[in-house]
Length: 114
Image (cartoon, rainbow, N blue to C red; front, side):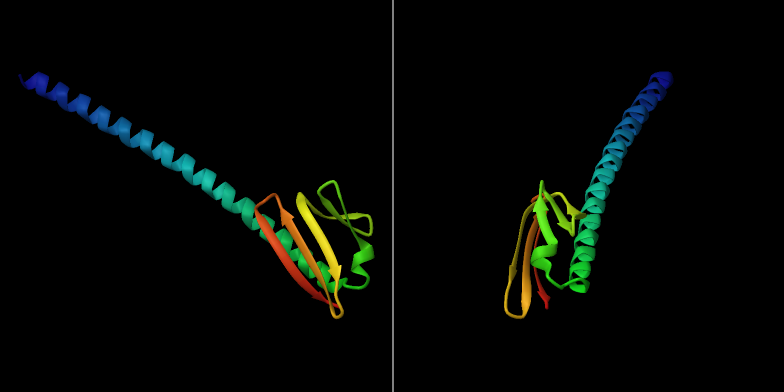
């Protein structure tokens, strides 16, 4: 009787340990995926912010210096921003209105002073 109770304890301990290990592994996987997604979004935000700053610094004749082809924005025929699904630039009296969308993740509307 004593041996069978000890065996039952060992089996229960193994089952509980297995459940804890499997759940910990699943949680670790989910955390990794979430962190990877958040990292990609933050990199995208940095790219957008640096593009905005660049355009503010180089705001002379933007409608002729910027071009959009094959989901890429070019500044004077050099790559400025990739994976852009939609782009438009409109010159107003005192500013440029720039609209862009990246991979259906971010949509930005900027007003860049002349």
